[in-house]
View 1 (cartoon, rainbow, N blue to C red):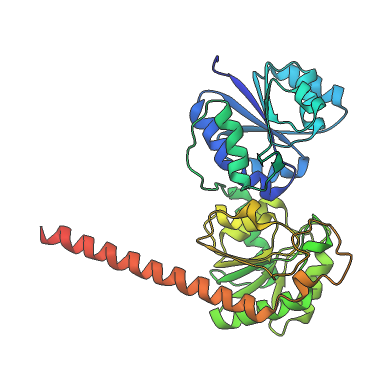
View 2: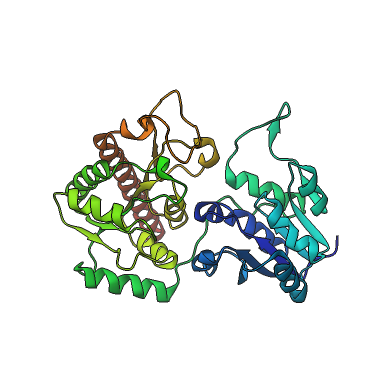
Length: 361
């Protein structure tokens, strides 16, 4: 197979999935370091593009399929690596006649649009949920790209870091204060939302116990939830809702936090990529899709018979979330921070011992 000069990567549609695709992006870049990788995706994902491994440019998906095909053809791509499973994602590269088009294919039409069609993960002809990291790596392996590690990877845009710091200062947060960043929204649907009162109680307890300032960072359309949480809290919360935080600012906020607390959404994976411990409240989704890199995470679920259902709106009483108590979340945060603090102390002791040994020689 001839080495590609220009590679198009069609990004997943959700922030968390984009972050979980970074090991596959890194494998692609390491296997073809001279190739120019362009990430195509929904326009709002541009805020992540600068921090993704090997990505040289971001191409927002706009316009009709024909207009998209003309733009892709003009750019002269040799490969199209398609992380989403949709027919729409494959149609543009097919019409643009990109020589290699790789991705998963469940139905005949999608298969016809690809030159390298992979069967979705399955056992005994039944689809099975696997880690999204592994799911995307299977595509790059099929293209002859060896794995380059499973760690998630994101960079923080310096301009976004400055904007985030300015917004925190304007909200009244002093420089150098330790923060708990709370992301209470979920673009997937209401079924992923932990109740605002529960968020308020947990944030109060965690903030008091660990001397953290609570920063609520809603995305577009989530401002009312953030204000409701702040209104229910006993301690002061710093709400960055006017305007809501951009994606690049969110990465900067999470990267600078002591701890992140949120639903099972994109910011969870941003925290993991930035090395920030995170406590996740999970309801209707299958944990097997994200059961990876759990050393700095605490993922809390209620064992109810109807979960995981993957419904956007709960048709009954939302028991998978309403039964998850704030006290349990606060205890998980304390255990995680204590564990990581002990590990850091052990690392410092070992480092001091090594240094002493070198001096004695």
